[in-house]
Image (cartoon, rainbow, N blue to C red; front, top):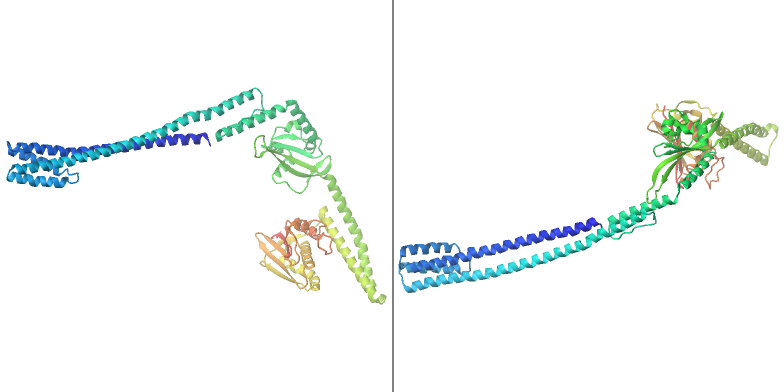
Length: 571
């Protein structure tokens, strides 16, 4: 429990009890005062009135007029002060007997008057005794409650007096001792308090301070400098460019490779902000532009009269300080990985594929032409086995021709030699052309293709017509391959904001979500899919659409069919 809570509870309870003691004392004093006033007002006055009437009765014989007047006066006052049980009847009898006595005086009637007055006085004397007993009981109750509450207040005060100073003084003494130990460089000293939350927090802060001092003491300056030299040597010998920025974008580290590609001088930029350096350096300005959202495409940098390619990676630096639990951001590192050798190998591979595909295309076409000539009846009749053999050769030749065509398209895209004829195209015409191209393929599986075009006649897309039809053909041919007999394929064209979305939906096996991104990679085929293909069609489609500033994707679940789509800007 916190000391503040203890003080609040103790002093608050003491305050409440004192207030309660004052209230009870005031209540009982007022009650005693009320009881006393009742005795004086109700009973003592009646005794006085009765005494005056006795005196007046004694004077009637000597001075009858004045005595009668005094008697009646006190009798009237007595009638207004009837407080005891039976006093009213006695007063009424007194009036009756006194009136009879005035009309016809006699010793017997006087005796009756005196008996009435004695009875009134007796009733009031008994009332005084009863009310006095009540006052005594009230006084005893007041004494009991005041004594009880006073004792409780005394006990609470004693507990606070002996407990509170010790509760505060003992941790302070212990903390003072520990501080002296720290002052004497005994950094192993730790404090542990029990009970009070405030002192527990103080102990935790003290222990963290001692731990940090111990950590600093154990690491000498020479060791720190040696560690710094090791890190600097390691960073400078890296083949990747490294630029270190603190939390305020000040440059505190840059290796030789980064200096080489940025054409900067280390002494001139260390301690400056990256924004200051970017004013006169295009590369640094480009790196800062992508610092929050690194680009996926390689950055081309000309260094030593040669084109080099680098991948930019931003590494945030977060540390947990000694004694703390939350991570704190202290800067970031810009890392540029040199991928030029891989890029050169990729270019070589692309050129090799393009060359081989181009060289293979001519003999494959010649083989197909030879097969067609052999199938001509002018050169003789063929038996069934020969026809089947020629059909197999023709299908294999066509497959090889398709593969070489896809490889040539892919190589054109990768080398940047692809030529796009961007123009305003009709989405309806694109869909109709693609459906016409694959109509025979759909008839073989008795598959119907339904088109739904939710556009106006004046809605056009900005695209290369032939390349877009090629992508639509690829979507439709894949949908036919993966659909069952007698199924339907849905084509939907709709407008979304300032773009037009084309989608092809089938009811085939579907694709698991974990493969959605990979299906657009080169040579990738979904595991378990036994369809023939090169795995290049979707990769080429992705390149075609992205070169036209569009987007491509897939929506699919296992056993629920697939929906391939691409989005192109409106004209």
